[in-house]
View 1 (cartoon, rainbow, N blue to C red):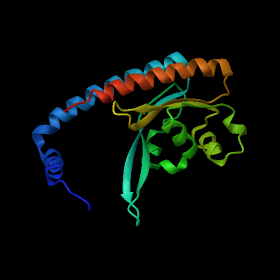
View 2: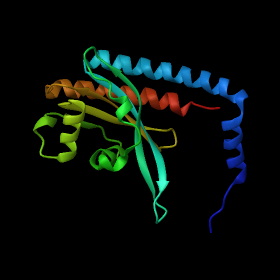
View 3: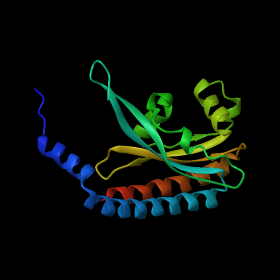
View 4: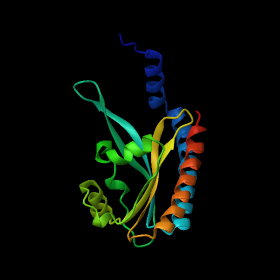
Length: 188
């Protein structure tokens, strides 16, 4: 048996159509966006990477059997001079595009990849070709209740020394923890 909570639906509808909430929500969103940009700027500067970014997971429409499709969307991006902005192309990307990464994230592990341009994995070659990325680090972001919420990462357009990647992984992990604090404390 499925239960449906009309109270929650009414609250969501009211909030979406209440112009009085818009200003409050916009101010809160701008504050959070500024904090995220600061974290991404620091990550870019500390790692000397070409791109730093935040992706969030979200539901899509349910399939015939009722199991929803999951997506990932690039919500924030900071780039170094001369690097192409890609955020506009990474909206509502099927999470099934990155199953290996999603499995690692679900186990609270970061993904560190180098020499992507030499990979025989078609999905990894996609990152190289679409993002001009030869190395990347991505770490999961969990909410306070343990739910996987998204991931944060950096891209390099050239191959990296393994020791440097190890140090940069710490930078990305710290950013993931800072983002967890921001979103876990988000209360309306």
